[in-house]
Amino acid sequence: ETSYLSLLSALVVLVKGNPVPSALSELMTSGWTSGEELGTDGETGAPPKWEKVIKMLVHEVTTLRNQQFVEEFQKPVEEISSFSQHQVPSTPPHLSKTLCSTSNKEACLQEISRGLQVYQLLLQHVKAEYPQSTLLPSVTHQTTVLIGLVKDQMKVAEVVEDLSASERKRVLGEVSTGTEWERKTSVHAILRELRNFLVDTKRALRRMGKRGKDFQ
Image (cartoon, rainbow, N blue to C red):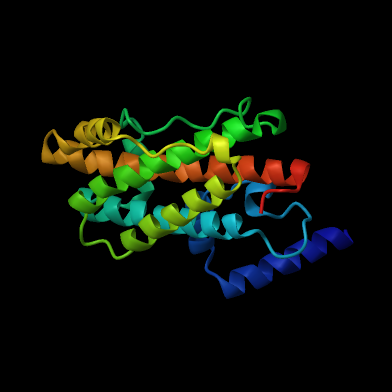
């Protein structure tokens, strides 16, 4: 009963401090939907730099995705799930849980680095189609910073090479053609999948940190 009353008191404080709809909508769109993702699993001390960068990126990409959806499609953000069927072929797949295990640390880091480089390139398409965004420069910069942090953890011989000119042309070619509607929906899909990739990346790197204690 004491625990129940304590929880009830905490909820009362939350409601007084933040309107319930805003808190709920932020939870639904933030990506931090588990104890591991929220960083509430009992760990203490300052988080590593990569975790701070990813947390900032997820917040900014989520905000950017929502802004673009509302402004470009003239729909409320509550209807964002109705666009989930729109895909971009060149977006990297979600990280493999099997690959991103302790025994496959280097392979996982390579997959993360490679995926982030593709998204870094796809952000050029976002800039071309949504130039009015004030958040995009920060998203692009922080993505570059994260790529550097991931590469720093690799063995020198394992560092992933940058995308070749032909690869860059192929990736951008897949999203730069089509109707205005198709280009707009591709921007939405890129931002949605980048957010998912970042959440996967955070989860994978935290597992490495817990087991190896060498990823900072």
